Length: 326
Image (cartoon, rainbow, N blue to C red; front, side, top):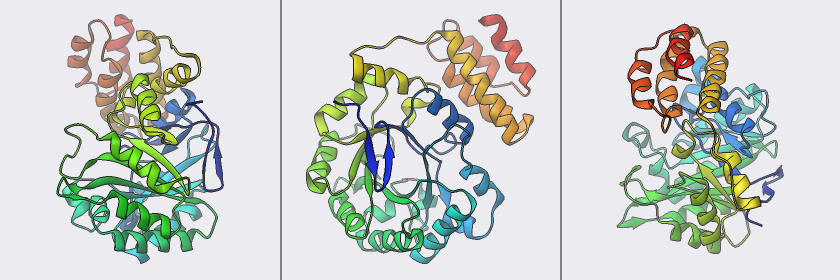
């Protein structure tokens, strides 16, 4: 079966359809909606190891578990093994999560300059040292996973070396975003590399695929073509947390039902309410502008709604925009 339980180290999950760590999106309000819509496992947006060790309050907010998350992972990034180890310890002191994920794939220049993110994919030796340090710090209290890219650019494809370094130093799972750092989020993800990684790892750890997953059909195709253990939705879940339940239905039953416009907007309001509770109305309403725009894609008259949404500042503003429309 394409939809099936999966293990990340000692962590047992009921399914294999995940929410990726998405910067600016994967707070616990959005993760909660995704879990309700069927996500088998969720990841926080990436948390700075340096900020964690300095006691930055914002990082603590990013790490909070959603009330309905039975299992989740906190993703951390950094380029210094000792700092990453201390950050992992702090994660488990502040929020007992089931997995620590190490970001070795972010292509953003300010992250790379610190020796973190995609810089680690092209430096397997340092990647291995970071994984080893985090594994020692965690001491079996949580699983440790790694997310990598195909390589730095087409002339430097290093995912095999990066994956082997992670495995040799104790990683329980590897996710491959099948694009290079140079591609960023452009061009086409090369799923053949995910298949190559599955063959290389050969069951020694779980392998998950990421990149160009925008529909249930995409997820099914990746599972069929690569043999990976699970798939990780990122941009495909923005404004569309229903992609998880639809994918599960497709994998199990061969079909799925579309979601009504009213159900989409209702989910957006639920997300807004949780975000207000975690922050405040002003901050939440500003943050939700992009999310309501995403939720309204494909809805009749959506363009006009989005024109108004980018000016919304209060919960009442959002109701004034969407209640009449629906």
